[in-house]
Amino acid sequence: MTSLFSLSVDPPSILVSIDITSDLADMIGKSNGFSLAMLSRKQQNVADAFAGRGHPDQRFDHGSWSEWPSGHPRLAEAVVAMDCDLIGAMETETHMLFAGGVVAIEKISERRPLIWHQRRYKSITESIGRNGGHVVPDGALIENGEKP
Image (cartoon, rainbow, N blue to C red):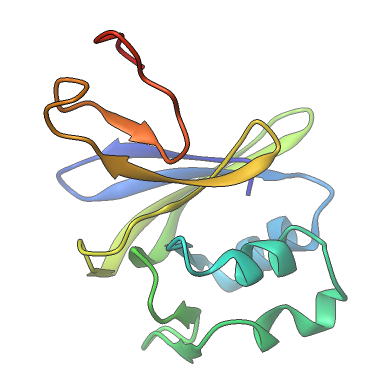
């Protein structure tokens, strides 16, 4: 997935952008839906597997997987996991945009998300007081009250 966007709150829906040459774009079109997960900072091995750092047939060997009632894959221990019905699609020159109507969601707010930024994994942490309560990436240096 190249990117994810919130499309609508009511009804809940999202938009995902997928490289048009990927097998995933074809699979979403054929299955009329998709699932996704916002990985927790403890799921770097899952991120690596799906980023191509390993054999594609072994992606689901990483993490704890089950299925949504739709049959789409469901990753346990993610920050957020969603199952979506395909409600629209648009082809661009390089990507497919898929609109998904959220039919099921699992959210665990105590988990911190895994973020890929500046060619490395990061997580976010709340620093209250020292920087005025801004959410900053782990390892970010905030000095003299600067905002991130």
